[in-house]
Amino acid sequence: MWESPVKSQDKQLLPKLPPKESLPKDSGLKAVPSTHTLYVGHLNPQFSVPVLACLLRDTLERLELPVAREHIEVVRRPRNTYALVQVAAPKAALASLPWRLQMAMEEQLILKELTARGKELVLSEGLESLNHREEILGREQLFQGAFLGSETRNVEFKRGSGEYLSLAFKHHVRRYVCAFLNSEGGSLLVGVEDNGLVQGIHCSHRDEDRTRLLVDSILQGFKPQVFPDAYTLTFIPVISISTANTPLKVLRLTVHTPKAQGEPQLYETDQGEVFLRRDGSIQGPLSVGAIQDWCRQKWTIELGKLEEKVKVLTVEKEQLQQQLQQRRSLSCSCCVL
Image: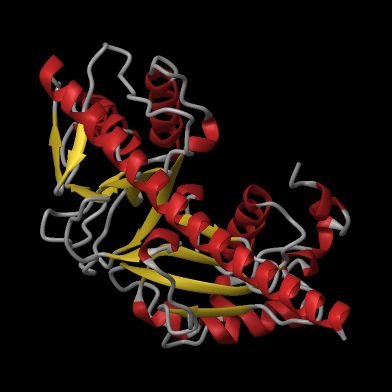
């Protein structure tokens, strides 16, 4: 799929840069490499994320910065599509990167298709070029050690270390999704300490696929049926200065606020258990008495809403009656005159 833009140019025009002749004598490429985060801006938004990742990987190889596919995170936006890349290279090699990029562009070694129309490719170390900050639930990347606040009725944090995804995660999916469905919705964030500090979990692309299949298979067994638009599973990249063979992510499983029903519905898991979310904690599996209390509370809430609507309608009715009486009195006066 991504080979089409490459074929549009003559492959003979894409030789690798001579490493010894192009680089300054004091480039220091023999130094011990360390991990750095590169920001690559002004990418072409017409290509999909996988295509941009492959093109970018080839481009970095021509700049003598080999990088694995899983170390490239592309954020695709219409106005500013960019990528965050983790590379292992000496500091001196990164210092000469702007010079090498300019030379490669002059010698047509950089694919024009990779860059947005009317823009120049931006390649810099660090995250200084990112000037946007979004809310936690919409954020596209997180920094290791960042503080996300405290746990609430609608937000739950899990560290997720060790074999969490293969052992404990499925049990937490049942408990927290069920509890959020039976309350006001909420989000389970895995890779965050209980104190709200971001740590991230080691999560490859294969782990992401397995996790999505696991969540879907569990929720398909819920009663009543949980439709796909009722929840969202997202893997947020975590920017870390430490060296890691597997990318760090924060897993965010968001359960949307259940739609209003004709009568209160109580969700149960694929194992027939019922959980509730109250005051930032999970209650369950529930007993028969607890379920009855839940039903009474739900009906009390619904009754309160109906009573409020009745009050509003009663006030509107009285106002309309007063307006009607005023119009009748004016009409009678006109008839007498």
